[in-house]
Length: 292
Image (cartoon, rainbow, N blue to C red; front, side, top):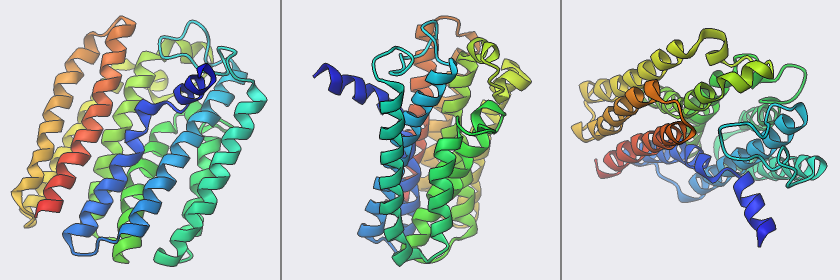
């Protein structure tokens, strides 16, 4: 049972809603135009979850062997760094899950065309190169780009496309909005880990630009996401989508608390809050779209 608990923790279950949120949003948009299709939607959801878990395992392995994660970290323990799982075991489990995700994703070609092969390859490769390879994205200020792209534009747009057969301007903007809100989870994480990342030469945007910029980035991302909802209503979509502004408002409340955070418990609350905002934004907007 202890071994199962270790692997469950290594999946980082609190990050998994970030993989679900954009798929739900893309599906809700497809439903809104009368193009909801159950099978491709479920495959997208399974693919997103597997890639997220595979990315988390790869990150655990790679940061563990690089020494980025240490016993002094403020966040939750990491299996490899804590000596709970052998690095080689974590490596091959991560590769196995990402390989399985890729094989599952191949079935989406039937619904969306061969160009999705490029999406699948890039998704799996970036999952590894997020913290691995000669130019790891997370170590060179590109982690935010990765999150916005794969947890926003690609996830929302791809989910919509395999059901509707095209991608609209509204879907692209909602995908970007979703990606930015999800990325605020990473912003909080890097805001918390700035001292540890500096020691490990991990050049996140927070390390490069400072904590003040991180707070500005967090706020601007929320404003953009809310602005997209207002624009959709102005374009003729039902006002129910403005329910998403409730999540945005809560996000701004959390922003003030993040600016004052100093203890591990403060950062944990901020991290949970950022994840809740991402889920609430996607959930409320999706609920509105399903009802319209």
